[in-house]
Length: 181
Image (tube, rainbow, N blue to C red; front, top):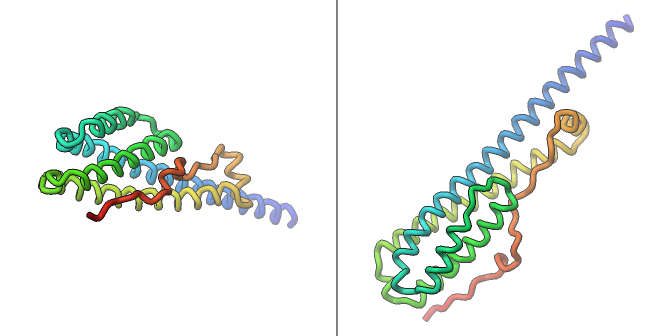
């Protein structure tokens, strides 16, 4: 009788282990998918910025050179730390485009520029949602890898905690100054 109970408990532990392992796999895949979504939006933004640069070229030579340099810095790296750094740099440059827009009335009349800025706004909104989704899935995954008893399966299975997508530059937290004249 004790043998059957022991065997039953062992089978139950094995099934629980399999269920937890599968939850970890699903959570990790969701985090990876969420991160890939961010990469897609960053790529769309990187493809849009050169077009904006062409339009602003005649209006602001210095800013154009700066933005071109930033676009060239966007590497194919897929680790969160380097992507966050590149994203932060491009976001700062896009704030400068908005300042250029305020300083050049002719640019305000350029329909193509306005359409591109609208597309850029949509991409930025999608990026915001993708970052939030990534951080939410990362939080769930990390909790699963750290909470008992799934932490045991996670350590056996080699599941490591993921990093959150966070602003690394305090300048990004500052409110940009704009002119309303």
